[in-house]
Image (tube, rainbow, N blue to C red; front, side):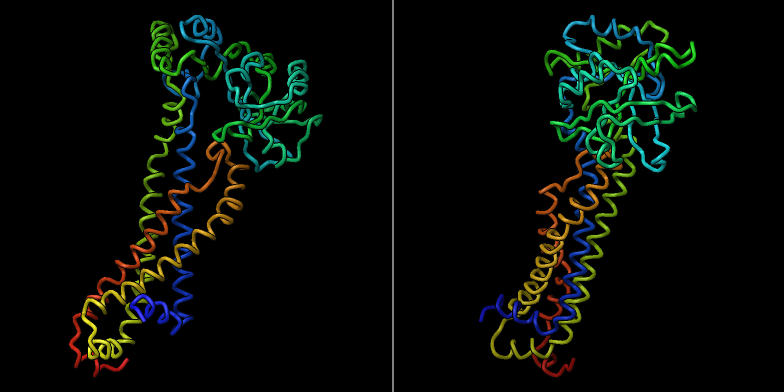
Length: 389
């Protein structure tokens, strides 16, 4: 019988305690994986952003608008292949009052060319282009709210007035890129522009340009801002990755808090393991004395205790990872994609996080057992044999 074999057999001596410890470790690992997945998925949009798109907004803040005629200047710049624009509409379906989704008034002639990863059946696209009140919605949003092609719906907007806006669902898009929000409501900018007051007409929220080479994105952004430096309304242009990252910067405190919490979860897991191991060592002190008496060295006792703790940590870590996939990806992940697609368009577990979780569970198990193992290895044989649990 080896030391590893003894450690395995010893787990069966107090099964209830070991099971509770393993469950505690598994719960901690599920929580850790969840927090790491939030950070990973939140940052994913910036990581997979298109390298050949440049976003131009008002220099002061994203919520302030730009004159529509800026589009002509942007399209005239070298290396700009295509350019489109959009406005935030802020629509809400009164029948689903608690459901939030993005509603954008877009340029129907260019938007789907610039965002080529949005896929719409040709017949639906043609019907939408010919329908002034037409709308195209993401497949996730359509499924969630029960919408289908041919439906007529009403939305309310706090930005474009308090009246009711009628739309016809002419198409449903899906996405060829994982970073795309599939819960967005898209409709004709002209429809919204016709209804606003005269002083608000011909204003757009932001411009998105597609350049002929990803290496020119930064230069195009600088050129765009230079054109408007002397205008009444200045701009700030960034490549799509930098633009998405700027949104992450606004929630950097939240991400840091999540990092701190994830560390706290690991500390709790280590304390759970340490408590279990300490109780086991105290109960088996007499047995360790017997092992020492028949020739086992102090290092053997220490490795026996460390091995048991690492085994419990590993089993709990693996169980936690197995639970994480159905709970996080199939459960919470689906809900977040449907309800918060703007922040989490693709909520999936990072494989590196699962590997790290198991490694940390095993390593923290060893760390938790380090002090009990050291104390047990330093016991005098006589004192250990005299001790009664």
